Length: 453
Image (cartoon, rainbow, N blue to C red; front, side, top):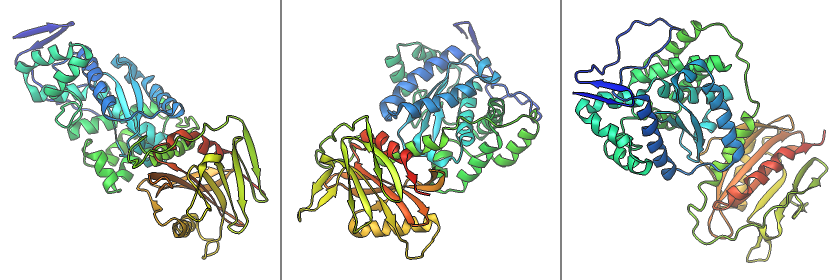
């Protein structure tokens, strides 16, 4: 049998196993044999990407999407990526799992959980370079070619050529869509090794230190459930870190100094999104929308810190508790005894740990316990804590959960900084369903904090 379509010839008896070629560290890595053309990789990827967007929420934060796109496009500008001929796209999905994947032809999707698991931009770029390498090496359709056999290829190619909507349905039924039974996202250990090695090339050429990819995978393998989430789709090759280190030593010597400088901000904004959750999910009762925060700002100037907040919000000091409540007029809901309870907004103040000048992590946990006394339903979120910097000082972001005064789930982000006067804290809170609408305001408040020297 001979099938010719879009300039591609497929012959019966074509051997589909990876070529047994001897390769030295640093040598080029070539795609394995494939029954599909690059045209069909693109069509299959387009159809599967349609299913992805229907299944997962896309992050609506323009800064984060632009940040992921900039990293991706820098990797896509490397020689191996350009020579593939694929047009890559990069999308951040609001999913807490530590995972990422790229579809045949170039669509790449990164989960917000990856941004919290990585420690620097080179590690994040390493995950993306690994996924891009699967595309360049055409691992998805290579695996499908090994699985389906020649006789089924005619049907598969016909499905790939259909209109996008119809193609998605047909390809899903045939194992080439996005799903648990898909061939295109389940790779062998050999494919994972190849993606590691080529990914190190892409990182080096883009100016990132490729050893950070090895460090991230090593860290992930030791993190229990987070590692299992990633490695369920990406089987961990034997001696992964050692193989990467050997490959990197064979690469041309370069300066690995490139960084956008936006990683810390991107990580903190991703944590805010994770704390807010998917919009509308889990709300037990209707929650009123907050008044749109004013674009203009005013300052809260206390004796020990200064911060900025929207001009249509107010700041009220509670001298007894040594804290300020910063909220819109409708952000305070009266308790049964008439005292105000925060529904939308922030609380800033100082806490004195019983252990005196405890380290940041210990002091933060003691503060959470103290806050729990007043808010019995307050609890730590599963999202990992993050180290950031505020006004040049080391700070920590901790995601919490609570029940809103409206009876719906509440999302909270706690910022803490050890200061000579005690532990400074900023607690940002809103019902989970509307937290994303206030996320940029909370980030603005955090960025504006300045301490008295």
